[in-house]
Length: 264
Image 1 (cartoon, rainbow, N blue to C red):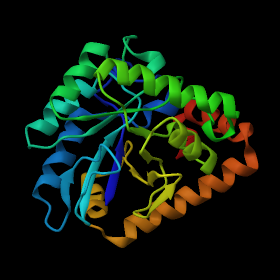
Image 2 (cartoon, one colour; image 1 turned 30 degrees about the vertical axis):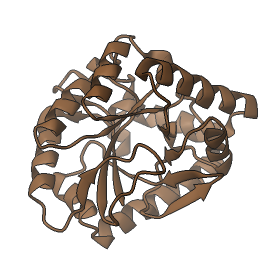
Image 3 (tube, one colour; image 1 turned 30 degrees about the horizontal axis):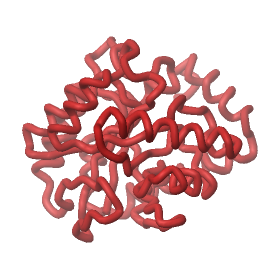
Image 4 (cartoon, rainbow, N blue to C red; image 1 turned 45 degrees about the horizontal axis):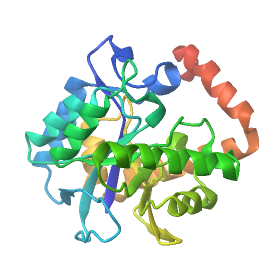
């Protein structure tokens, strides 16, 4: 399985209309035109897997499936869902429950509607902690259990799927998710390999952000090794920087994103 990680889809010059604000979040927001081009080229692409959804560990998918995932729970999920449905596809929408109904985020009614239309609703934690892998056991328990309970009550059925916010994943994060009853957990590691942690299926994803071309996304979806390997190398370089820099890494990243020219 190959999973693609998207966030928000917005109109040009209106980045604040959906999801979290600030440079750190904005780099993951695509314009509607860009996103529609991604969908069009994915639809035409030969050799890619069938677009599918994974809503529980019991779901049987083919060995070559393509999963489309959207983090944070931004208001653009409503638009994204409609664009997917035009092609007969469904996606995975991961909700940060502390932000349900707040400006720029989906409401409880919209979450229920997405679910009724066949999209998978999952947890993206309660508060979207900056470094989830550094949370205490009590904090992890609250992030997964409380968010799962809120979404289960909203949907009227047990929630089984989640994604890890911020790219800070560890086995402890998966163990806590499994304890909360989560059966399928997506992280942000660019890999097609899966793992089992206390009965919870852990999957990686290939991240899509501003500047990533539709052609490159198609290459990843088709299983081309080079773009996947390049993203894997970049991911591991960031992982090392995060471990060595700790909170200083995040401060430097935010500082750079305030001045886009410094990143060129």
